[in-house]
Image (cartoon, rainbow, N blue to C red):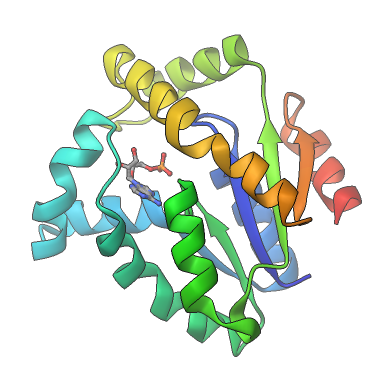
Length: 185
Ligand code: AMP
């Protein structure tokens, strides 16, 4: 499996597990939140366009994401493969990805990192204390979890119906979750 998608609520550990999995197999780790934050920090045109969405915890428009991600997906698919982290984030985005990726770049497996809600909130508040992310305030955390429930969680059914989904119990330590993920693959 070299073309993977990680799904999880904010705080589920997508970034950490994504990095470990991508390193292990030499996959391109395409983390859309990181890419967008880098644009904001660089003060690029794209960064100025998307900064407000990130600050408020709302989704950046689909076309912006598709323009950003598709070239990376196609390039990675001709190499070692990709691990998508943070995209797709809605059924609409997943449909567009299916349409535009083509057979050679199509998603092969989707891992849903499942973490109970109270633990997610605790992890996010802990991260807020450690990192300086503009979207880790309590108000924005609540909004991001709502966006996940309304727009991203339906992806679980979408990929289950497609026969691509594995659900990982991601409530343990980093090493436990990594082991569970590797076992699922
Ligand atoms: P993350 O680091 O994955 O939690 O993403 C941080 C923020 O980046 C999100 O709250 C959104 O504002 C934006 N973002 C990241 N990925 C996407 C996506 N696939 N679609 C829309 N917005 C996104």
